[in-house]
Image (cartoon, rainbow, N blue to C red; front, side):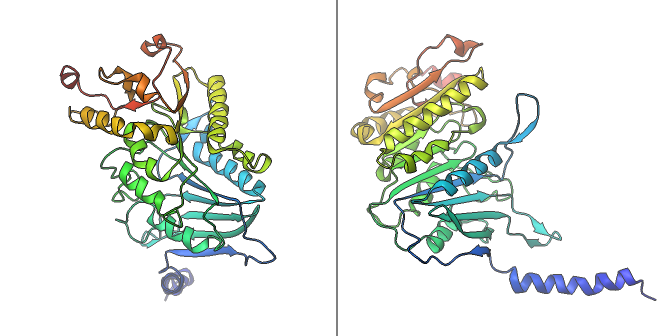
Length: 366
């Protein structure tokens, strides 16, 4: 005789399987979508947040309490989106890919789409192709849900929150999607997909990561970006504050370079009060840096040719390289720097604004 619980399990299992194949074959599922009517959908600017959560972002606050750094970023993004009465905001929260009953892929990541301060779409999604080019799924969703009235003169901002984007390789950046390569090349190609036309550019790209204020990253982003805000070395908790994106509403005439300066200054002041480690933030004005593009490329190629790069180490200041011209490569940069309170780095009072991977001792002797 069957036990009633066993009968229930037998009956429920086919229902779960059928439910998955009916609704789960698609890589996306709309939780909410509002039709844009009554003049909604017009915006002066668009902001794209990509918040990486498929890794370890846990840290402890001043009182020792555990804090998920990416969840704090998400809370700020929600507030900015709700206040963006003249903007369109996309928030991609990329979460670990999990399975239902250990078999079926769950749609773990989220897209929150705000138009004129209102949540107009919320989508659960997963990456159906585990080997796709980085940001392919997110760019497809952006194109699907963006307002069709996006015009060429709209301001465009991209904010990336995550761990360091490596120059090369980049497999296993996502803990549960190890075959999607995340590196400087794939990142630059990926965010270009969010530009609707070939003529569009990003007014500002914010890299809230460690060690990505580098000649290589600048070279890849310059062709389609005007300003970059990044840290050339270790960034405490990989967290650049985005609260001042609200200036796009309160001061709509603000330039991208002014906005980047405001964000960097706020972040620096917060970190100055919270940490005793080195603080380094740089705003790169590509309109000026672009004039030295050939020199920057030549430096990067020469340095890379030495080989024996320590890719998994924190950057050093590029001015430690003997043939780095601090004056030439300092044009177009605004730097916020504070040395560590203790240790060898406490003896340094200035920074070039550029980060370079260290070589082995043998390479340094060349």
